[in-house]
Length: 119
Image (cartoon, rainbow, N blue to C red):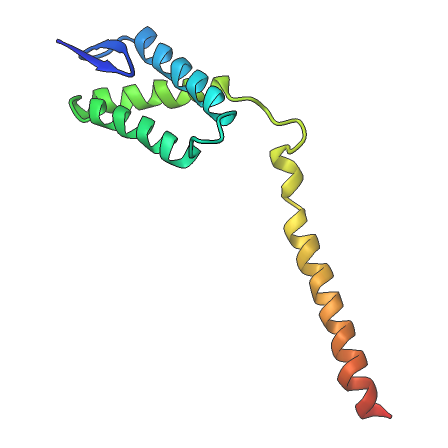
């Protein structure tokens, strides 16, 4: 038995090479869609995920887990690292921003209320 997802033919259960080909194809389509302003990426990605979900719903739970492990693993493997915004660069920003905000609030309170009450 064979199914079509985005023009690619899949056996049930699919082979690993078919799943990897689908993930590569979805990544290629996403890269192309990024440069088209008329495409809303959220809707586009949801439509891709819906087609994958519809196909995976015909699989047994074990086959579905295996399918998603390979599909998601391939998407993570081919994902581009963003050199301008590395993930670890944002870890300290939140605490630093909170600290600066608290210092500014403390200064405002001091000069607005505490200093006038002390005089």
